Image 1 (cartoon, one colour):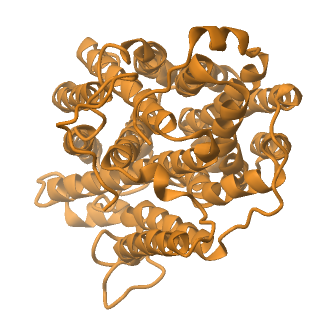
Image 2 (cartoon, rainbow, N blue to C red):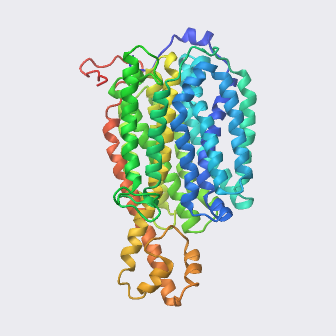
Image 3 (cartoon, rainbow, N blue to C red):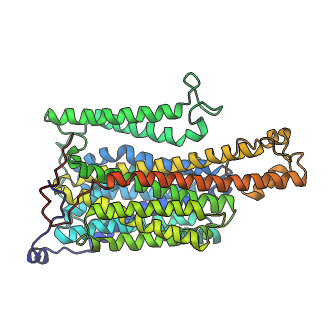
Length: 549
């Protein structure tokens, strides 16, 4: 199995050309899932006001969606093979619509989290079904175009979610945004009757042990990363449910998740050697090129999730501005991602995946360093917009490229396995990226404020203890002033505290972006392992074929 793109005879492709109408349903299904995730950060401010909870509670809903998808998507792929892709796809789209109705009617943030859990369970089957249904309905050049359109769907969902969600959130409220998703789900359900698929195979068995191992691994990793801030990065905080000899359970869960993940791979290889059907066929990752594509996909999606959480956090919570302001601030980034994700396929014939991948991560690294240098509390400055655009170019190229490397390297029978690996990687990365962004920024903010208030001439220790300034979260200047007015603080002390918080927020943002730049730079290493030849070329004999070990 090579990593080159599949080429087909032009005459054959012309006679076998299928209608694009069914693809509209698959495209909209990707829009449905991506729009749902992108709409949550835009709705951050509205949910915080409606439910009276901190922004990190709302981020739990984002994390919950990604957690459930990542934990169940491999099982979803096997269920699709057993029941039949079209039937199961249709049922899950209908259930996804029910989850969006739950969002519209949610009376509390708990309902929002539950709705995202239901949506994630549905997406765990929709994600691999998209790849499998494309493989069964389209071939040759049409298949490559169809696969590329999924990347475009993710990008255009980000643009539309921020623009439409921002406008509706400002003028009406955050709930109508999810009404749109109910309508899209109904449209996908109707179009699903145009898809064709082979009947399910009742003989397909689900490896329960592997399913439990990967599910627990994803659960442990996500819970660990998501609670690093609340439970403590090293030492257990007072909010931790328990401690292990003073150690926070959060990093322990991360380690346990890694161990369980390794156990999953060990069990899957053992089962494959025994001639039994595994939960996922690891042959799609048999060379370091395919594994490099998965690593690169994880990093780029995590970086995107971190940025998509950070910008709305600062604009809506810190600056106290509207969701529409958020959509305007994010528009350069989202538009750039959409355009680049759509057009990057044109460069596949001119540049190798390795060149595009390395160049993409160089751009995201430079953009994040630039943003860490020039960013202020106002996101609409020209230097900040330039940084977002450059980051969007790199991100848009990468998110389409790495998925294409996996799809074009696998035979049709493994399309569901590729889809499940894609779903696990992207959604775990999204959950981890969002969780780490929240934990990192709040930790940096707490450290910054804690250092600033020590021996501050205008902030005595008794005032600090009244508002707990050294254990803070992200709040706007107005909210902080309101809190301080209920204390013994004088007007001078109020302004001093606001200035301390404002400086600490900006410092946390700049340092957080610099850390993300470091992560992006490290990803250049796996990107350099992507295929060094273009689709249709014969690999250079001097370039050794990586082995599975």
